[in-house]
Length: 107
Image 1 (spheres, rainbow, N blue to C red):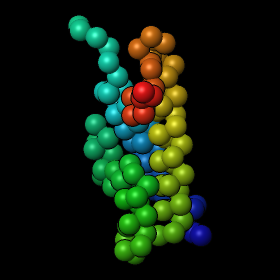
Image 2: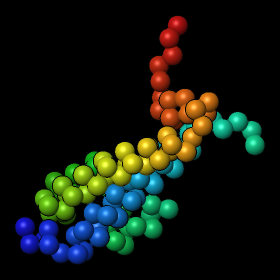
Image 3: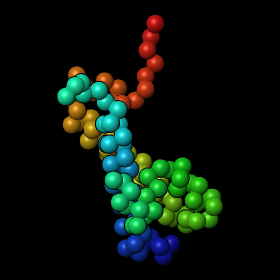
Image 4: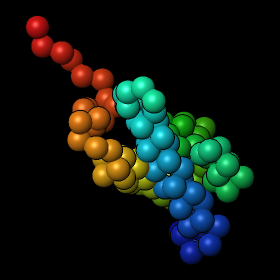
C-alpha cells in the first residue's frame, strides 16, 4: 500500500487516463464519416498500456503490482469514457450516428 502514496504511481495512473482518453477520442473519431472534404508518447511514464486487457496481462504475468493494475484499469475506463464524451460533445448530431461503433442494421 506504500505505492499508493508515491507520486510516480499517481503520475502513471494519470498517464493511463490521458492515454485512454486520447485513444477513445481519436480512435472513435477516426471512424466517423465527415463527408468529403500519440498515446505512445506516454510510454516512458506508464508503459502506455491504454487497454485494460494489456494491464490485466501484465498483472497476471507479475509485471505490474495489484495497486498499480487497479489504478491503471480505473484510469483506462474513465479515460475512455471521457474521450467518448468529449467526442460526443464535439461532433455535430448529423455526423455523430453511432459515434463510430459498429451497429447491426435491421432488414
